[in-house]
Amino acid sequence: MRAVILDQPGSQRIGDRPDPTPKAGEVVVRVHACGICGTDLHILDGEFPPTPYPITPGHEFAGEIVELGADVTGLAVSDRVAVDPSLFCGRCWQCQRQRGNLCENWGAIGDTVDGAFAEYVAVPAGNCYRLPDSVDYNAGALVEPVACAVHAIHRLNMAVGSSLLVVGAGTMGLLLMQLAQSAGAYEVAMVDRDPARLTLAAQLGAAVTATSVEKVVDEHRGRFQYVVEATGVAAAGQAALGAVESGGTFMVFGVAPEDARLQVSPFDVYNREISVVGSMAVLSTFAPAVKAVASGVIDTARMVTHVETLDRFADAIQLTRQRAGLKVQVKPS
Image 1 (spheres, rainbow, N blue to C red):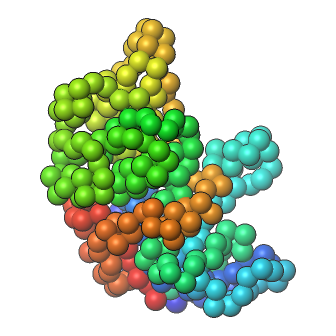
Image 2 (cartoon, one colour; image 1 turned 90 degrees about the vertical axis):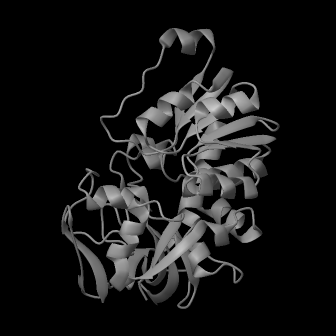
């Protein structure tokens, strides 16, 4: 089969790999769509420590089951599926207390083992979620980022009728905004430097949009009960932290460099009872994410703006780095 191969950080090529053979409990999926996310860029640049090389990346994907391994039940050849890339050990303390996303032996398809920027990939059968006929493969490949956003909504524990500010109107920020509206936020505001993304945010229902946190706070006439930093940029996170009202919650959702820092006043956290939380990947949120995509809660057509072939993987990466459009996907098959 043909696949993207990263021999080492900074080195990528399209090459031939052996077709995968399913082990017991696994299936082989023919990949029809695989999205590019920030983690893929970190893997390409050698900035994601768990990743071994060589590796085939790709963890946001959907496709068709073409082969079943031994002991697989409940699935059939030709089933259309989205795949949870999570590989939790099930034995460590975090897994035992149902916090697999914090697994002490954490792994993921496309992050620590070969992934879906390839024609075929072998995956655990239990990680496969059937797609309704109404959900095409491009929308199906959005289920993984939607599942991450669903986990963030769970972590926020947002009260109905709340105000929310999302800093960063990229794919993840816009997914969060749409889910928050469905969860009962009465007013969602968006900040981004890109006017085109703010226009889309407004079309999707953002009540207030602005190019800076300071401007959006002024227009909102005050701070917000919930603030989510969805860029991974420390300066944006610092500004976002200042937009949390007393008794509110600040979430770090964007993936920042490991050495990035925010300045937090312990007195301010104490005196204004501010909660600071994080949200890491996926945790039992694939099933609700499939429902959110299938029900139209997520406007998938607006989220996927570019689809490239495997041969044009380098172009797809460049589009993502340039922040052209929103979600860029690759069609390997």
